[in-house]
Length: 216
Length: 383
Image 1 (cartoon, helix red, strand yellow):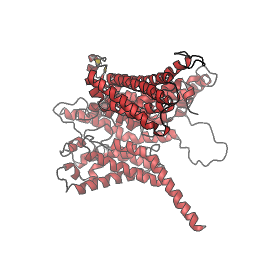
Image 2 (cartoon, chains in turn purple, brown; image 1 turned 45 degrees about the vertical axis):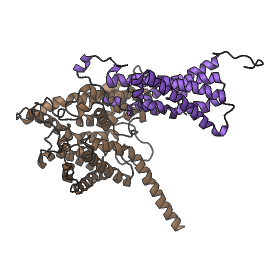
Image 3 (cartoon, chains in turn green, yellow; image 1 turned 180 degrees about the horizontal axis):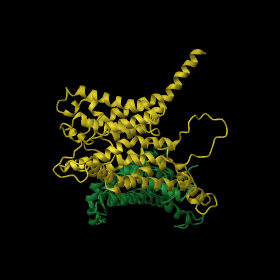
Image 4 (cartoon, one colour; image 1 turned 90 degrees about the vertical axis):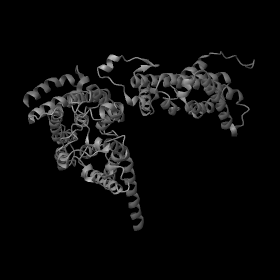
């Protein structure tokens, strides 16, 4: 911060908004419809969804920070390549950490951790925000968008695991007596297409709560 | 009729604007128009020659479904007692099936109409009759043993996501009744296929596999051609009897409710795929299913039912003349292809019709485009 300018507070209302708006009005999945592919793939159970959410938070936040710090020295013509190098490095780091500390989950997520590289949210945030803003707001923006992504992932995963497998986080929730009465798990919940319908329902709910979001 | 009119007139002030129960006005409208012809008359010149409206159209389809429904009731009882090794009187069979299907019909109508009325209230529309036919089709295309709560969930899913999100009756892309069945089929596969589900309270020793399941497994159908026609074999409620369905087809075509182009081309499509497969069967002797005579495909399973009642749904079918031919043909063609070539799905009619439903607007688009192109050429040639 230069001394001539007034020092901005670390958590000024503007910065707080960077953190919270992606959770609701500018949610990357429900409003910008980015990152849908991985939402289909990793939400059968809650555990992988949570891990995936955390990984994306880490990558977007740190990636935003790095890109924002370098933004004045990146030549405009090769900026996409530079951004990709940063993402790829971070994703490999996350992948290695996952393999080291929670091998089972990393096996479940399999290729999808690697595919964070292609997650549109990352490139979107780098291009739209980090290239034009200072490191600290960029960092907050990264956390906010990662969180917005992760929350939707977890909500979808709760619905899918509860109705598809009758459990939450691997613990049986629906009692055995239900099954004896003729209840049965919904096989459609385990298949990817239903995720689209759940995400659509969330969008529907969000838009009917907040009329500003409806396009004219 | 007089007492009903009196009751309705007594209620009317309460549901009009400013009335106490204005919230229920659309429900009132629905009941009133069910019993009485509307008194709204066109004031200027119009070209309507007939008072046919949606209510009457829907009613014709429901009547056309009656033969299949009644036969289905009899057959449900017949198959049940047959599996027990008993021979029963006609009425006894009928009564047994009636008691089996009645709860499914009630649940289907209650859930579907409930959701439709709720949406109509919310949006300020009138309740319309869109669900009359779907509500009757659904019980006819599910197995006898389907648990009622599954029917309820599936109907709710189909009405909300198949119909209401697109804007209600007349706006849906896919057939709601088939969507209900597709939901059940993918969500609860064990309740929708196999040899246990088609006969109510079946004795264990009796095989309840449908002819299609037998064929997929590589066995002969186990039924004669006459039985295929009459329909006393296991399957969903309404799909088995070709004769009952033909009566329905006659009613639909005579009143002009269903398009004969779609119906004919659907059967032609099925037949040509069947013939094609027959031709291939010499080269692939391992697959005995290929050799089933093409015309028999049209008699077994849900092919006839789908061709008469499902693919002809005017909302989801193609609208243009040429489009109807293409649409129906593709439907029948794919149905038999799925049936024979994909061992995971013994019956392909549902999937095929849902698929061509999605393609119907595209087919229409290209038919219209090519018409425009042809006419433009003619205009250019003249000038």
